[in-house]
Amino acid sequence: MDASEHSSQGDEPIPEPEFDNLPLLKEYVPIEDPRIPPSLRQLAISQVALFREAEYSLVTPPHIISCMCALQRYLLASTPIEGEQAWWICQAMARQMKHARIEVANPSPAGLRMRYGNRSDIWFEIHCEGQPTSYHLIADDFGRTTFVRPEDVPDERMIRIEVPSVPPTTLRDFLERLTSELDLAVPEEAKILAAQEQRRPVLMALYHPRREEVQRDLLMSAVRNELRGIASSRRDQTILNICDQYRNFLLDGETASQLALLCEVINQAWPKYRFVAEPFVTDNLDFLPEASLNGILHAFAQVGWGAASIKGAADAMQEKGENLQREAVSAPNFGVFYGSLYVSCLWLRGAMLAHRYLAESGYDKTGHERIAANACEEWLVVASTSISDGFKDSMDGRNASDRRRKIAHARAEQGETFAEDLATEFVEKDMLYPRFFRDSLLGRGATSE
Image (cartoon, rainbow, N blue to C red; front, side, top):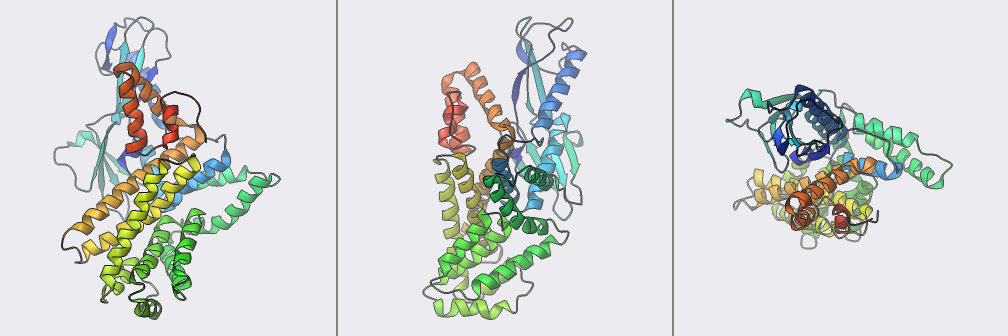
């Protein structure tokens, strides 16, 4: 879960028209200010609680098929369980009103206003079974994640959240609900229903209590099927097949990235080591029935050409992923934009795994591999945040509307240049939207979908 996934600000009118003895407040003041009547304070807190809860509400979208696609990108960019847990954690954070920053202003008798966001002095301590405890600071414009508790944070500013030991299925259930609303009598919807029938067994297996074994078996089965008969004419086609299965939601991102990485390692060994690379793989498959990715990489690294091939694969995959993200902002529509970010996750995750393996296994004398692994992780955060926002926007446009309000507020407070800069930041730096959508963020008319 990335800290930037749960960061919202609002500037809203307060619905109640009158409050007794409310002073004129030219500037925004905290809701705790003693001049604020208790009735107004309670109303503001209730309103903000509704706004924060709405950020993670699941609602029937106007375009069901588009929403189903966006949801499956979110679930399968890594693994469904990771996506479900991140959604659950963000929703749990949103419900913690201690984290909310609320301010009100009353510049005129008829001008009562409220704005809200996240406090920058409140931390979350996340406990998830089988994972290290993590600590998150989530302010409006920045965030921080660490696995070591910050020494300067007292208990009263630390909110503890326990993630259920049984992974939630909230998003899978929502996908099933959306699927049930499609009509076989409509040709386009019938086509999607047929595709979902193919995808469903894979998705269900990835929620299985023994899903780690399922994923390992899926990886090893794919390794045997794809690599045992690999030949020069088939190498690129094999990688294309992996990408197609991932793009069509028939492989999760974790499995697809591992399989693509192994293929890329062999690609790097070709043609100089073509006479030993393929036999090495096929001869070792029968001895690795329960191998992990690191186990296979370790077997590669033991031979003379292995470590260099792993490094070459890592660099090549990182370049492919970064290029896809750079190209995404120039996409002509949202389908191409989110599709490019989604596929970039496959390459960047594979690159991160390879760089990290080299860094942790004694093949990183210069420190380059560790730096490269961190860079890949940062690119992945960018893509996953945008994919998450894309899913929420596919339901009701909530994030896009929120950012339009932020830009309008920036324009009113600091001028057009500041509003332009903020829109540019959302597009070029954060990669939350393609360039064609920038005018829409600035309130300058319609955009293509």
